[in-house]
Image (spheres, rainbow, N blue to C red):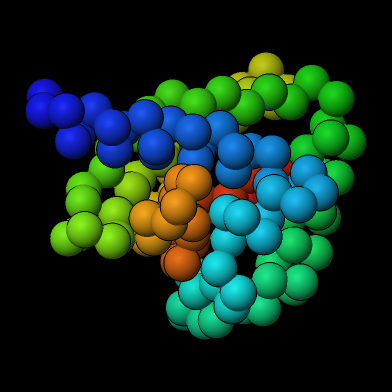
Length: 132
């Protein structure tokens, strides 16, 4: 593995850890573009940051209400797309009610001073489906 890939992997690891803390005040403005391109059931659409944050807050509240829920980063892979963009796949293990599920999302990330910023969020799985 070359030094550039090692550096990219470290950036992705930091982004993935921060993504789990997205509801924290001030973090989203650094991590998420406005608007953000989001893959939804009806297709991909631009979502204003306030609307995205409201959805994240609702998701966070639902997960917090499931007292036995745990989320752990399990894997990242990244491919640089030139000097400015990165395509990343991030997976987490989500445990709840005696079952464990792998959650996977893809991200189009912009390299910016101080880290990576999400331009497109493409979830393959949803934690809300695991809480039913």
